Amino acid sequence: MTIPEEPIGLRGAVDLSGLAQRAQAPGGQARGGAGDAPAGDPLVIEADDQSFGEVLELSRTLPVVVVLWAGFSEPSVALVDTLAGLVRARDGRLVLAAVDAERSPQLVQALQAQAVPTVVALVAGQPVPLFAGPQPADVIEQLFDQLLELGAQHGADGRVDPGAPGTETAAPVDEPLPPLHQEAYDAIERGDYQAAEAAYRTAIAQDPRDQLAVAGLAQVRLLGRLQGKTLDAIRGAAAAAPDDLDAQLDVADLDLSGGHVEDAFDRLLTLFPKLDADGKARVRERLVELFEVAGTEDPRVAAARRRLANLLY
Image 1 (cartoon, rainbow, N blue to C red):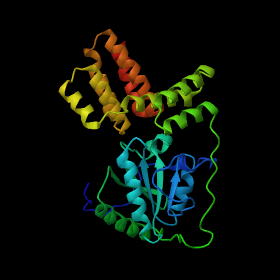
Image 2: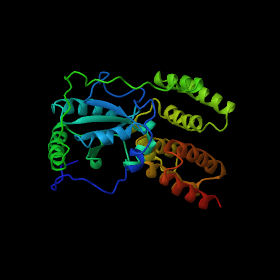
Image 3: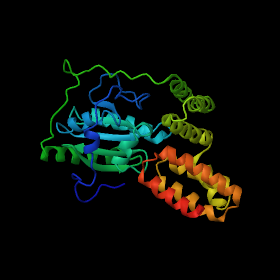
Image 4: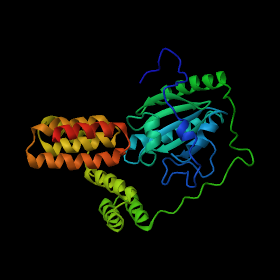
């Protein structure tokens, strides 16, 4: 990415009003955050779909840098640490809000993120798109300079004093997960995707209407399929064998995990007509899983469903 010749500015195309109006439910702090922000750090906070209204309000006082990251993306985790250091160096004139993209699908959709990491700023309650993907520190520094100027223009030029008494607040208390969901989460944390899958399957057997378990199962199966594989190996195999179903399924998984949702769907739907009955069944099954991972309310999922239906019938 290069700094645009034209200064960054507020954008009206992204509507965050729905998130601003959401009830501030307990558990706003994401589980298993990125980076090493100490508890109560007012300059580096964690946010999600539920707590984002508070972040919007904070942006009316000073600019807030929002980074969408994911645990499966090492570059995004590293970027959180880089951003945290650069924000702290700004002497309280910026705040960083780290958002786990896997746990905040509404924010991902509202901010129109196509990949992780994605970085967007908020100034006076309005979004300011910055960049996607890892960036050099000097590029980020230049963007921060522009962001502070923009904040001053819109009256959002306040400051947070990290050393002042009373600035630290108690961390929100997470609502407990249902036992099987907690079992799955713990298994994911230690990289045991088979155990996590078993826990979600048990939850679904007990309650077939448990949509969180259905989505969780699809996500953990995706993580399990990618475990131990490298990006270069997956893309190399797919490029070398464009008609190899296994290779194309792997790269579709990779695309979706990196936020390239439409690319993942298009790859499989383009391949679909060339396959025999068994191959078509495998692609249909995989697409149904990927729809769950992306979020069934996502308009890109709706478009892919329609395209799949046309191919089937």
